[in-house]
Image 1 (cartoon, helix red, strand yellow):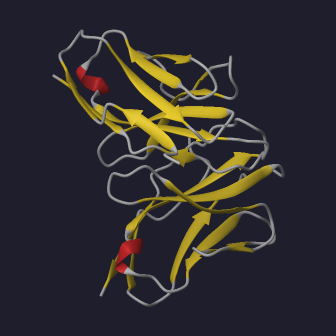
Image 2 (image 1 turned 90 degrees about the vertical axis):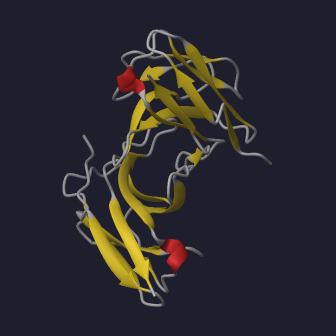
Amino acid sequence: NAGVTQTPKFQVLKTGQSMTLQCAQDMNHNSMYWYRQDPGMGLRLIYYSASEGTTDKGEVPNGYNVSRLNKREFSLRLESAAPSQTSVYFCASSGGQGLNSPLHFGNGTRLTVT
Amino acid sequence: DAKTTQPPSMDCAEGRAANLPCNHSTISGNEYVYWYRQIHSQGPQYIIHGLKNNETNEMASLIITEDRKSSTLILPHATLRDTAVYYCIVRVRQAGTALIFGKGTTLSVSS
């Protein structure tokens, strides 16, 4: 199994451009999450989806939108990229039926906005 | 804000036990303690979690104090590959609840 797959791995954008970060999981998990990590910092939650059809804001949602396309896929969109959004973005999933199911993370998308 | 406090860094000699402390003095009765680690810039990796009893798995042991206000993650025989940032997180026992990460402890294992 691939686990959590994120695409692309690297991306460079100019200020004002838009893009969508893709995330897919093959573990039949109910919940999915988007985090960002700035250099030397811990992870900060952007948005999450507790189950298919629902999304909720995390700690730092401004400037982002999300779509839970189906149970497998959860995308993150930057409508008008800003240099402050330069970061590493991690997608994660958890679930099945276990309330204490640990999060499984992808390997990240490294985004630079110039 | 994260609900846990961890030392920013610790050192450990290879082969020795690494004991990573975490303070969570405001933990609620329905919150579990989770530990994750992040090696270089990879995605975080789950290590262990517990409610009030001590827990052990193939990676580590988790010791939670009786009043649940603090815990210790123990890596019994640290190796160089255990060098990473270790995150202690409290989380309610509810499906879909997100983890809120703090800054963690950078563990450096040296030979």
